[in-house]
Image (cartoon, rainbow, N blue to C red; front, side, top):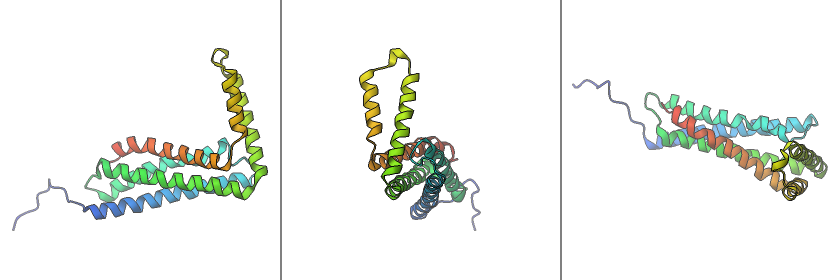
Length: 186
């Protein structure tokens, strides 16, 4: 009988790792997506602008969820490190699902609250842009560009809000998935 070599690492099958990646991506991505949707609903119910800058507070949970899913993958696969591909896969899946739910929740809430809330949002966004334009150094100001900025804010649609939220959440998650995937895999 031959003794087991303590220096060899146990192997994990691709199917098992793939199932684990999907399960963790779903758990963390859907979880943080639901938390973000709950934050939007809370903002709306407390008569805050759910489509304005305050929604970013809920979106900041996405990078934490991405890192959490990668860390959990590492712990569940121990003593075998997950590798860069698996760590990135679970992080990207988490970020993608969170972004899809964030965009869908903005779209759904915007349709649910009606045009009056969107008019209020547009007015607040125009005011924010005006303040930003006023504090911009004079040598960097461009009247045509500033007028175009104000016009874009005044014409925001539900689609623009949902796509903007999806993109922002996806970028937040993907940007953090790379360094956390590299560092949390070992």
